[in-house]
Amino acid sequence: MFLLHIGSYVFLGLFLQYLIAFIHEIFHCIGALFFKLNINQIYFLPFGFYAEIDDLYNVKWYQELIII
Image (cartoon, rainbow, N blue to C red; front, side, top):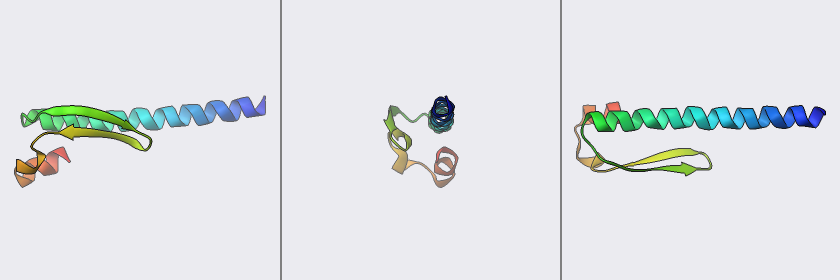
């Protein structure tokens, strides 16, 4: 029974971490869409998420600061 509680806490903790990381990445995408940049994909990685944004190297410094 004790291990079941430990397992549920571990699962809930990992789920919340990935949920927060996903919301964080969505806000990067919203910033990119605000400056009319294209988002190709959002990758799910073991350590979080990664949004592939087109033309990120051709933006002004303040736009990059807002997006990144």
